[in-house]
Image 1 (cartoon, one colour):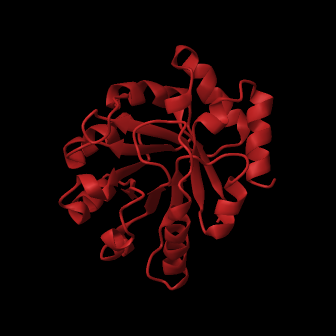
Image 2 (cartoon, rainbow, N blue to C red):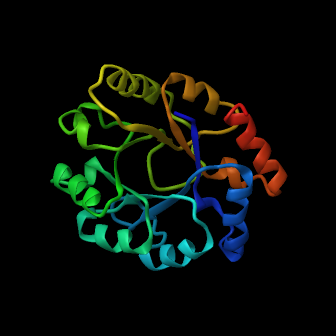
Length: 219
């Protein structure tokens, strides 16, 4: 699998969002990451299906929606109809995780499950064959610009070994504190994809953003 970068528009300039989306395309990044927060599961509020439906008009890149919300199953249909290609829910926020994963897939979308740094991989082992995307939080969710938590590396390696052993087929994605300096090392540890927020959008020119993606993907 080719390694994947998904810039998170949480860190984008929303006063010029069309340019920001175009910049993601120009850079060579492959997905657009959408951080959805409800102010309950995490102490922040972002945006919902209405905004995503507008963003969908700006690009054909896959939309990777990360629902940091309580009762995520209640909103799956709305996010699917808004144009998401992948929907990820948190194991900590869903009492019926297997049912929700199946529900996401019923819309023809890829289903993801996110684990907070303190949540063990065992939380999803029983349904590993149903998960398309395993999103390992490498910071505590809720805010951009946090530092990477190195203790999660062991979880990355375990999740990768499960793939090698044929116990899972998931794409392993990381979210939080991944940047120019550590991304290539984390891909070597077993990650397939990584979200980048401030590491991407803090670079103000298209050229700087392209250089970041080129370096991280070792192109």
